[in-house]
Length: 216
Image (tube, rainbow, N blue to C red):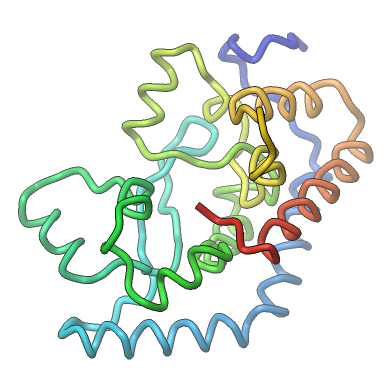
């Protein structure tokens, strides 16, 4: 296998990684089900108070293994913000909306800081759109820009709920593309058992960031 991730070649992933994805997503869906129910109710009520029909889940188009899929997250955005963008025919870049002030609901602002808005992606992992661990998915515009810059990290492997970069957020001098390429190289050059152990380590690192509420 070539170690250079700038070569657009699909990475062969062991079946054990998919089995691991199913086990992890199922376990976490069960564990977090009370949080799911609470946030769905809270976001629905908040939308009603803002004069909108309850839409607690937001569906966006993202890229994983070079293919678009329906990316799920809790709807942390003010209804009027999304409505105005759609009415104007504007491209909805959810990451930019999160960075810009005033676009998030009160509950959305709170859960975005702790990554709880990403919980619905457990179902993306369960059905196979994503992996438990991998480069984080991007929207179509960012994906095309990445390809123009010879960044194929989202084209050659499934994107993940927990990313190799996310587990290092807040650390100085950490480069996202570098961390994602290091992860892909690891998957290409190690046995299934080593990949699973590494995935577990990255998930623990990401959970620590979640508990520290360093989402941004």
